[in-house]
Image 1 (spheres, rainbow, N blue to C red):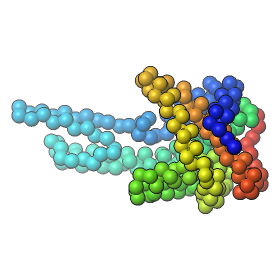
Image 2: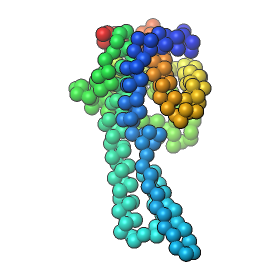
Image 3: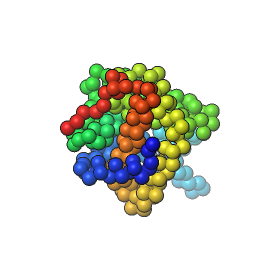
Length: 255
């Protein structure tokens, strides 16, 4: 039976050995995540006459309305936004998701040794790369579709599939249906406890935001290391209950 204090204590012990490398991993993940919180394009257009003043904000997440510009320019900007969204989605599918799996693997390997920084990119060049892309895409798609029903079904699925990233980090050849099944079984009866674990970091995040968000970056290694300990506990549960075995989940390299 795991507790929040136990997971965090173990995480702190791991970080004593490799905090600065872990911090570098987290910074790279943030820079390459291509999400709206870390990467956003905004252009402001100002146009004035004697009677009116116009101010327009352009970003890829908005649909263009009427512009005080020639139609050709408005059409070009609209097309540019569409291209940007497509590029964003492709980067998320083929770069961000594999890096997220590599990040999880790094923190799992750090539990048993001094994992190298290159572990972050271990998914790339791996024969199982396309399977990782497929499973992560389906995971995000299912969560998104469940979120369309109402807000809470999406949150439920988010926690139900919480372990998929780690399962792929350990076994990148795992089929999507098996990865989803294992994650559902691992998180059965644990979702609320995991939710409370997430909430326990909000105080640290708030303090980090007081330092112009820079402080939040230094909290990320602590969070990732704690979540790695959580997966280790869920993995032990899966083995104890006969959900999986070492043939399917063979562990992480030791350095």
